[in-house]
Length: 389
Image 1 (spheres, one colour):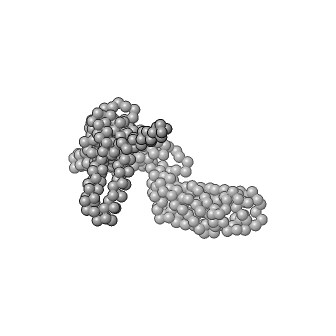
Image 2 (cartoon, helix red, strand yellow):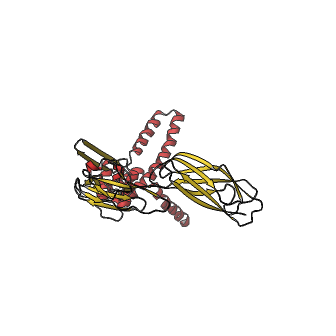
Image 3 (cartoon, helix red, strand yellow):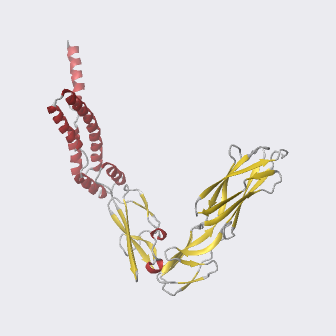
């Protein structure tokens, strides 16, 4: 009899906690208490537990709603809908969001970034905005620029460069950087910064200068504090294999310096010159089903070339020729033409076929040359080697 009573008591002890499990409302109150106390981690944990409970109770209420519809029980239906609306209200309010953000930015905790990410993902009221702005005016010239960026706090944001902002450098000057005040540079043009926890505004800051930027070599030279009429030395361009230097160009003001120019007379507030190069190459060869290092004889093998304009300038009226100085091959469909090859883009040349003579020895290296010539007579040559199977 005592054993039976003990068993009943154990069962009761095991089941009692389940009978008193916290409801969604209890967990919401725990969350609110953590928010009021400024305990961010406790609020995060309580909110997660609450959302799990809300999802479970919402499932149960959906079952009750279905029953009410089946039984045409209007009172049950109305009560269930009211309970569902109550559950739906258990989420982050604007007041909760503001309170938690205040606690986060003042916490000094290593977890602040993690908490801010959580708040961004869970609150409809938290979307920090980074505003990038500039306003430049001069005689007969006025230009304003504003851009808003809203991403998760802690995310990378890359700031615009002088080229991306545009504007006339001879009137406005050259972008020196970005600042949280309009008169002190804090970040360089093109620098990647971390999104703040709160709304921020960065101001574009310009100065009178002349810059020369070579995107090929990542070299740059800047002449600061220049004045209208100053004469400065034009940097010597890099010597790049297969590339032809075409001079310097400032897209903001339209000023151009030819490859022969060695001096530049400053106009207005300055200029932002970029090095111009033209270069084209056949960057890749594909032989269809066949390995480039194992080409069969007496077989039509398709040749597909990837043509790349790897310069900074568009090429126009480009004639393409495929050739070989080997008497062991026959090439078919060897000519093509492109009206325009845009800078930085790739083009696919298909249709050329090669047939290797039947008596060509295994292991023979077969040179294939691709020559591209633009409308100004500039030629670019690329060479590949095929190996006979």
